[in-house]
Length: 189
Ligand code: GRF
Image (cartoon, rainbow, N blue to C red; front, side, top):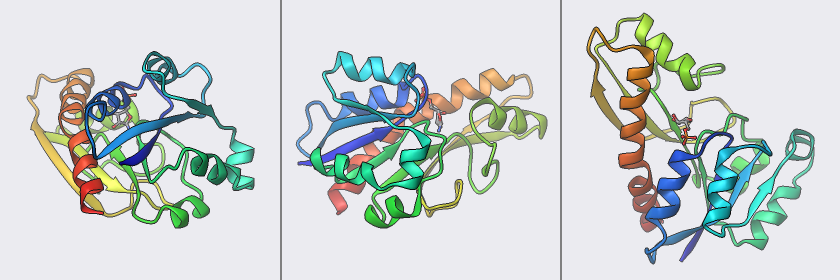
């Protein structure tokens, strides 16, 4: 049984799906939820499921390696970013080589990089009149959205789709695939 830590800043709808996926699953369980925002909805979702939570601050995260000890305490093997906006520091990427994954709400390598998150992505896709979008699950390195691509899923867009409509279609794909892709990766290692 592997132990997963989810890092999230937002509402945590992906985190919720992942927590539920692993509730009755021998491969892994979500053992810790980490956020940099005290008011993040994801913390409430974790509390309801009795999953321990941890709030991190920028200085400690980038200038010390204290978090590694905390991850050790919970025997964390695998890290899942689900709406977490800070770059991973080098010590994290090295300690969890190929064990940190992220989900991005577009078809990387397009519409990625610094500042490309949330509705910014969907607005850019809309402005470019793309006929499809989708989501990308990828390994995480020290650069935004540049780690190796693990899995992508596409959705077609209509010319009448607003950025909000695009966001809904993409989020649906994320909910459909993220947990299963994580399970497959964990079973492979
Ligand atoms: C998702 O769109 C994900 O692609 C991005 O952040 C969003 C998180 O949404 N990285 P939620 O908090 O899981 O609802």
